Image (cartoon, rainbow, N blue to C red; front, side, top):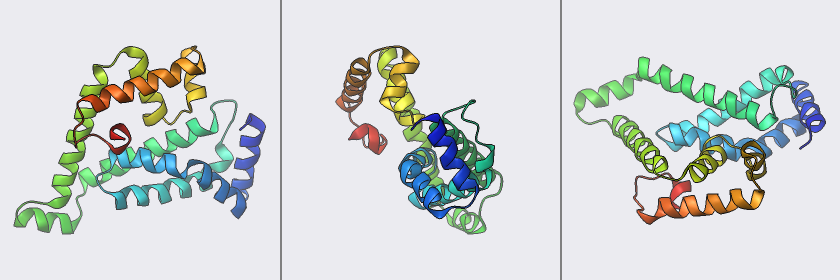
Length: 187
């Protein structure tokens, strides 16, 4: 999407045009969900986060400046900030139902959060042993939401090299496959 198209889309979103909001969701909904799911312990929380992120995008659409960032970068920055804020809020103020369950013994929510943290740690450990190019391509494309073409431009390498690095990197992550890996790394 060209800069002018991105700006026009966000101007239409700011005006509350439903088709523009739907187009924004169609374009970035899956990406926002995947990013939220990587950090949040449950599908339900990730789905809630997606809804809240798109509400925030709608409310702040007039602040989008295509000269400062691409639309995908801006969307992912808002997503990241929102998810981190959400994690901080839940860490500071646990839900009453979670407190009750924790007082009774093991908490599914706590176990889920611990599992997510363990998965994240395992993923970081496994990414760290990949060659620099493979790690960078995987981080930028899956964790930061850039397209492979954008990654190629950022790294100043041919698109074919980026695709090969992604394929080889994911294959290496699968070599010692573990159920603790995120869905995208295990597929």
